[in-house]
Image (cartoon, each protein chain N blue to C red):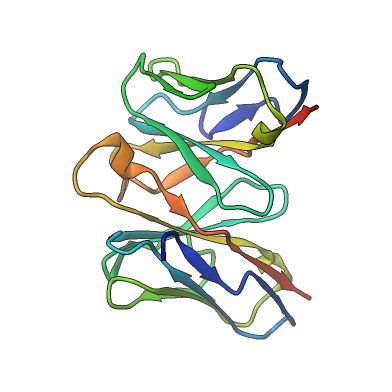
Length: 118
Length: 115
């Protein structure tokens, strides 16, 4: 597709259940990021992929959170045993980083998954 | 400044007014400053990425300036229109970070332009 695609757009789940959030980045973008925005907070970095590897997972808030990327394309963020504090908008972004050049460093965001944990 | 701070938190202006917002960020180990516009029910959209002190960028009626020595950036909108209503986010990339896109975001400035 032309842009970053995320699914589902909305997810309501019960506390303790596992959820999977999907991101399909722009074709050819090697860098992929997950961010989240909790109520009243700024966007918070979760994890960065370069190709299929994740050199920076420093933003994942607990070991209940994991992510993978396959084929240098689609990524899945999994949250196990969801808690109410996991409720947030989860945003995926991709970028084309060929060389150090300002326009290449712009992030292209999806429209997010609104996760509500009851 | 340890975090990225934006002011004001929200702003209401009339159509045709010009307006500006401020972003403050850590001046040490600076790599880049990003501005994004996030309209309700849409994806955040990149406006500018700036890396050089003194840089000034323009896109239509929107422009931005950057002062890396003192750690601030201004975003200006000339002749605001209702379609400019959105949350404007700035984000800082730290030199020595693992990637260009690992950003620390401010909480945003919510702009409402009244017809």
